Length: 62
Ligand code: SF4
Image (cartoon, rainbow, N blue to C red; front, side):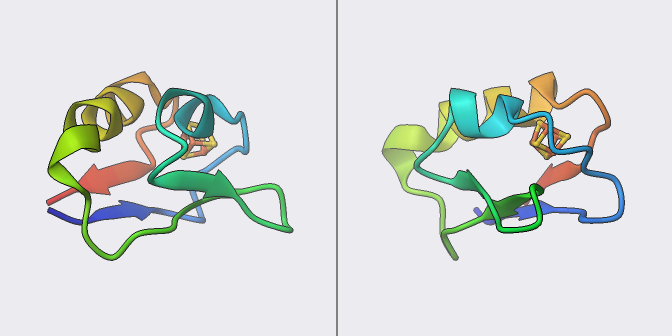
């Protein structure tokens, strides 16, 4: 499974990094990025929770 953040949609709220820092980190522009090519199984639930909690639905996991 891979995560991606749509930079056009992200508002930089930081929720995803707070929920799952193993996968999401804020970049220099204050927007979130997926830092892993593949999501480790141990953090998949957290990554999905971050996707659910993103207020603008900028995160895709597939
Ligand atoms: S939760 Fe959504 S809007 Fe907030 S930083 Fe993450 S991707 Fe961006």
